[in-house]
Length: 134
Image (cartoon, rainbow, N blue to C red; front, side):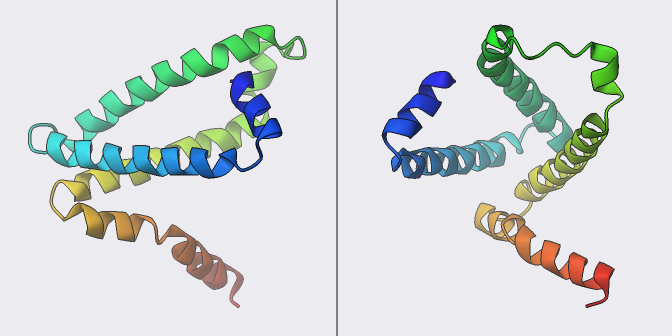
């Protein structure tokens, strides 16, 4: 992981390549989900995706955590922190959004679902405007 950061420091335009790689990966994921939805339910796809993401993240993050001498928080204080609560809420909302998206991919064209899913900033603006009564 540190290698990616050091490359970014020496080559500032590499972020465009990272963005291109990330968007390509997301597009491939949606295509594979479309194919998988013919045999698996959306919840089964979520479980497989979650396990794959967990393994990938553990492979990337655990070496960085083990080398970081500043992480000395006991597990109990970490789990009771406000940040953990906020991250838990975000994970629950992201899981719900992914489940709904994967369900829709099974019944609608991928382009339609992707367009609706990428309209999230517009929905965020509308929800905030209604919440603040602007």
